[in-house]
Image 1 (cartoon, helix red, strand yellow):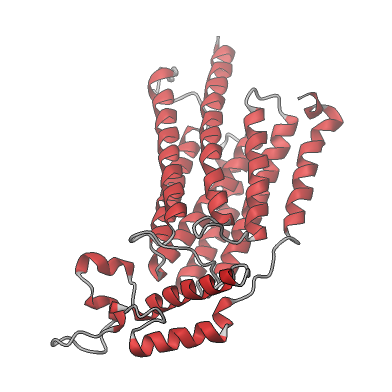
Image 2 (image 1 turned 135 degrees about the vertical axis):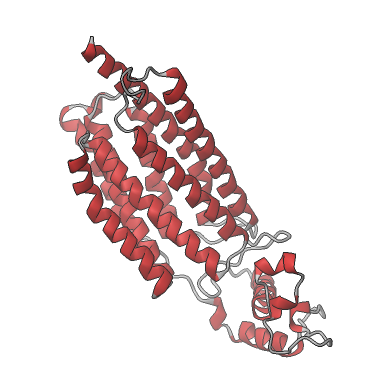
Length: 352
């Protein structure tokens, strides 16, 4: 990678910036299927009668004839162990009418359209988006394995400071916090894609924003080699304040998905630029891993911006991004471990 030296060191971040700017103009405006008169009439008829065109019955729309109140939430008539899904008459009618309408569109060789801001994805058992939920769970497993191996490396394999028994690596605590936030984010991603409700959506958006915001802090601190607490606080404070305000806004004022997407995209772009610039200018032995992660991040942001419609009823552009996160998470923790080994060796050499 000789191009990483001298003037050529600017090649990667420039390409990264151009790629990210291109995504700003790449988002396709999807047609809203919930404005379709056929879909709307299907939902209205389903809610009124509890029946669909194919003579199937939506049990959530049939009020029990026992002593339960008729105005009680529809999903509250479910057994307790199923109420967490919050599938009710309205949501079931929307889902089944959406699937019926998409089958009709497919017969006419028409592509899928969005309904209520989301692509039509098929369920599997109790899982609302099974493919995305499974990918999120796999990424959670990779994140846990990466964090655990990082912890074991620093605690039991690398030497510790004899006077305090602390690690020599200056960014140990930062990476531990990163690991906890990453696992929390991917946990709620798996839950949200399994069951999309108001509370899972809030937890998913909030945990993702917190994780990305902290990732930007970590990127700046590591790329700038900031080791003293005062400098770290000066960098972290404004970012933490912004992310906290954003999370409070989502939870207590307006759960705006579009706004959250824009905020997370901007934070992701800033983080990628920081790492790309650092990888282009440093001689770190693991810089190629950072470059691959940055390139994967470019593609991920691009796919999110393109808003790729679903294929086979289960896989859309967002699911592809979730799949890309699995190898990227592995490379990320591999870099963290190699960075810890390199910095520990360098510090011990200076002490001799």
